[in-house]
Length: 92
Image (cartoon, rainbow, N blue to C red):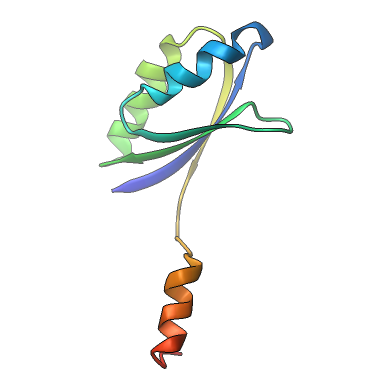
């Protein structure tokens, strides 16, 4: 299983329609509108890189109003509760 984050920019006129269409794509688990230089950030969970390529090249390419995407693969996950639990157990 791979996790990735898609940074998506959209045309201003399409902002209201792009978010729901992103959320409907296979493998996209969460979509957020954001401030700053990116309009949407989508969290993706898929089986492998081939599925990610299909998502970006087939599904996202068909969403009118998207002008640019950037894909970032997750390398390591840090969860504050898990880190605290490890220290509570005496694991260093």
